[in-house]
Figure (tube, rainbow, N blue to C red):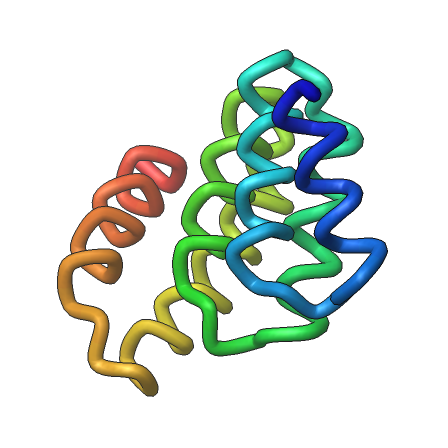
Length: 103
């Protein structure tokens, strides 16, 4: 069974599984299926708004698609979440991307 099929099966049993949802989003992104990847990142943020990597990776995906305004908004949300959850490492990476997009 391929990774996407396996993760989809896990999510059918537990739709709010953070790690399976993130894994599925990343698997779609790796296959350049960015629409599905972004859908999964959005669902992940909806179910677990404190999961900082979802903000970071969805912003990177948006930036890759030149959807910079959306990427900037997602980074701002992610930076607020990183501050709230004390995730300084992710905050630094997101700030660097934000600086690049707003330069």
